[in-house]
Length: 224
Image (cartoon, rainbow, N blue to C red; front, side, top):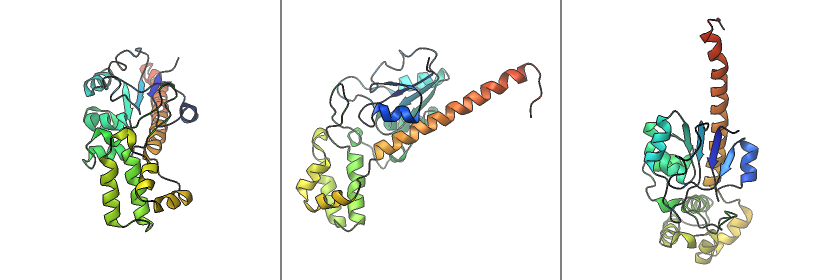
């Protein structure tokens, strides 16, 4: 039985995530999901969560899990949002998106929101955080000016999140199409999810090593 669960949806395919961490992968988290986990769960990863379909997981639920001694990690999407709110209580935030919310660079939930296909969790739009990063890359490459960068960010941000995409940006400024053909577009959410899974694996190994040493001390055996 796993002692580790990760709430994952459109940020990364489950098959890819399983190659990075041996865990039980559950659909995007919503209100009440953490409280319903069995007592055997000692590590929780929050990557994706529901915003509009159901009530979002609350900071209080995460704080209660932390109080029980469960280690909770967050990144990428809902995980980054809740980690920014509860890292002072012990939730471990991972990645650049978490850092931007923690530091007040980002402050709106819709920065990480995407529309996705029910059942498959295939993303149907692009997250604003990824589009910002891609436009910054285009500016650095000289494809757009600083003024155009600002204008394009404002125009795409003004759209309802299910209608935000790189294709929409290409329609607004066609030279971006050729840029995307020769340049892999960044995916901060995916990168941060990879970092979270790696961090959880390291934390689990550390806890396992501590558990192996503890019985020896309890029996009075000296160890080096």
